[in-house]
Length: 69
Image (cartoon, rainbow, N blue to C red; front, side):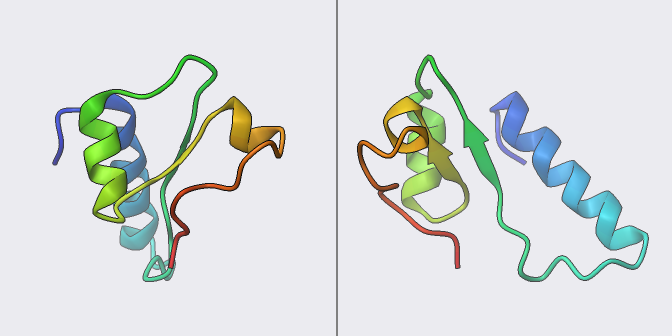
């Protein structure tokens, strides 16, 4: 697990869904924020572990820097 509360909760939700028999192999995680993201979340996003969507991405001013695979 990672020390970033929101991401941990999303990962736990994915684990619970998998435990209930849902196929989560293609389940990607995304965080949305109007205030920006911590450096730790940005590092994780760089590794492909989470997609970060800020206001610029949300309103279509820029494309997300990474895509979930």
